[in-house]
Image 1 (spheres, rainbow, N blue to C red):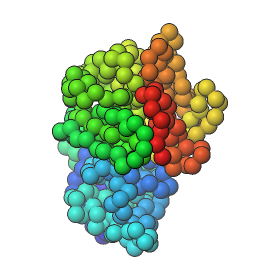
Image 2: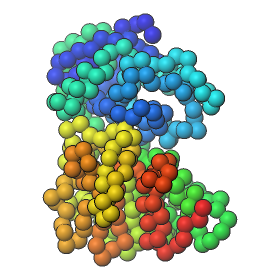
Image 3: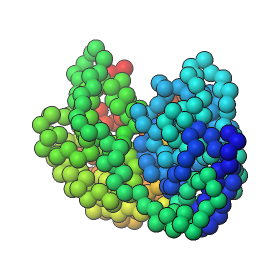
Length: 364
């Protein structure tokens, strides 16, 4: 980790550090995540497609590389930035370090820069494009950075063919859930399987009629990357599914697409919500939850038509919409990824609510 590397932001700011992992150039939208742990899940989250991910916690990699913790089979970010990468991880499950992991996959890592300064700059000015280079930036580099835009994100990360995953639950009626893969995290499928559902995963561009042919008991719209408004075809398909009468549950990007399908609006946040410590409030109960999120867009709260829907969760930090419940139809959504990892205070109950909408009991 001795060769010099540079991060250049679109405002002209330059930060000098060192390479780790593969040494190569990468251009993308620079975003930061505030999690103290969970770097493996973040690295393998397709939701970071087209982005350069910066970790705000200074030491990353201390428990190594653990494949069973991966959220997908791909590395989501185009490049990775940390203050200090741990070269000698200590964990009984570890199978290597991040430096080797990145080299094997051709992913550039940058370390040794003032990550706090970059984070403050993004918080004050908003998310910016950036580029990692081996040499000080040129005018051509700055032009490339400023022209960069994430496009075709969902198509790039979605599965290409349908696949059925069978639950191992021995008891009760086994519902079938159609999971539309917009860049889904593995934990979403596993949460459904653990509750006793067979999961039929479909590509993002699968026609609604092909999904209905599988006779699903419910439809789950997954998380994923990019600007939700860039997907008019998906929005039309989601509108068809929401009108079909089948229970529909949207997560992350799926939450945003479901809102757009009902005529609501979305917008780009100044610097997004990324990390495992985002506080939200359940509007029905007043209870607070600490949630895991990865998104740069949100549903415009004021665009929600009170006649057809209501806001169900609110972000405590900035008041943005974190969930929507739809009236007169079995449809609801959450901006965050439901998780029972926090024990009794987790948000896994949203999956249970989805099963209730399908008219089946949850198997444990």
